[in-house]
Image (cartoon, rainbow, N blue to C red; front, side, top):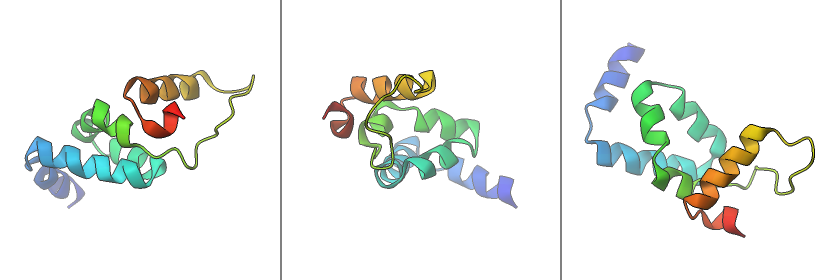
Length: 89
């Protein structure tokens, strides 16, 4: 049943799916990660620049330390390049 639901989701227009993923990203970084793990299609949609522009960083560490993971730094750089307002300030 789960694969059928994903097939139905993937049959939606890509622009609509992008808007949905952007909305998810604007509410929760954890939920965005969960969406991206659902399928290759959703992972690709989740990697759109507009998604990184709208992702919320409320639960994200604001101060980088020497122990900060390189993936964290890379993610923040993508958000900054995407002109995410929370990442810029």
